[in-house]
Amino acid sequence: MIVLALLLALSSARADEAKEPFFWGVANSAIQTEGEPCDSDWTAWAKLPGKVDDGSTPMQAFGFYRNFEREFDTAKALHLNAFRLSIAWERIEPKRGEFNEEALAHYETMMLALRKRGIEPMVTLHHFVNPAWLTGGLLNPEFPERFAIFAEKVVQRLYGGPAKVRWWSTLNEPVVLALGGYVDGQFPPGEKGNVDHAEEVMAQLVRAHWRAIEKMRKLPEGENLRIGIAAHWRPFEPKNLWSPLDWIASWFSARFFNRAFVDAILTGEINFWTPGAKRVHETLAVAGIRGINYFGVNYYGRSFVHITLSAPYVSISEGPGRKSDLGWEIYPEGLLTTLREVAEYHFPILITENGVADESDLVRTKFLLEHIAMIDRARGEGIPVIGYLHWTLTDNFEWARGMRAKFGLCKAGPGRDDQRCRPSFNVFRHLVRTHITIRN
Image (cartoon, rainbow, N blue to C red; front, side, top):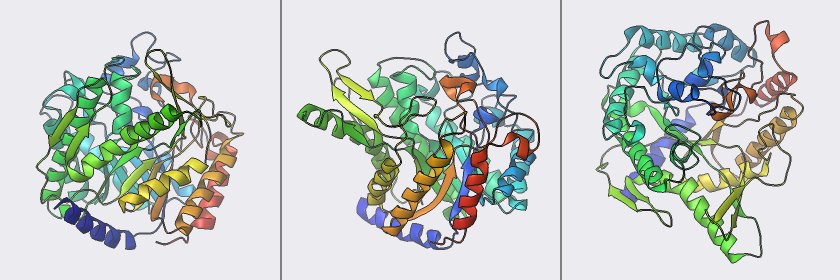
């Protein structure tokens, strides 16, 4: 039955794909850009001393919530036909069970503004942030159902209304979210080394994904929605090629980080386990529910894996190549590797995020040229890449890194685009214009 369901999903996904142009766009998220944030786990977390590198908070984000018209005009100047953004759950449901009609109307206005410019809105429903009233966060037993209710409310308004938003991501980087909150400690609630909790959070996110899809598909015309997730995918390589242990650890890291969650959302079969942690195993009742239509990929680089003799016994590090302002290796070849691996799932692939922290703008032009060349190579191999969304249009609040990580084609300050946008802006515009006739 699982195989049959995947084949049916594939055939319908390919039918959807054939109707769409190639998507060129940018991506952002609510709390990272909007300013004027509502109460959430992240607004509280950022106020704690030492949680954000530069001491900044989401309040200092550039004000996208009010200045969206300018941003959309800038996107139009880039000749883009897609714009990915997220909906702030904490705005829509500031108190449990109380929905803010004004916020819903505002987001609808934003989607209509994109439509007016010929830009396809693509909406993410959960991008790392929970409303403050959700005590216990992702471990709260109510989380999957509460999230599904929120998703239904938003989709009902933005798809059922005049904006007719078709493209949705239920979750952004769910494995990063689980590890950041419960293993690395860089996200709320800041636990470190609690793999048991990280695996349970991953399971909660799988439950939330499927519960939301069930409600979304039951809406009028809900079967026509394009639903996916945005998964962070990385190639994992052994640090020492001569070490069998490094090879085993790199294979296991890739299996856990890249594939375990994806397999769960495709089949409804949760099976998470790492050495020393409890196994989380559950089979969800998902028969008859149409799952995802496309596979969203966030790609930022590769990881090297090494077994050590002291705790935590596994070391994950960046590669030796050129580095971004955050010390992340710039490795465009890894995007081609990623696309080849993701293609094994037989879904249309949308690159939902790809970008580089580069305040000087001395790296970004080459970064764009090299990564888009990898997309061309992938498509030449028959891999169904249907779009590229650059992270990001304007500098944002970058979680634990704060405001110091400059991913934007444009700076966050006031002024005309020719004053605030970096030289790479024009490079990206040229790349979009020269590739604009691509069709699937």
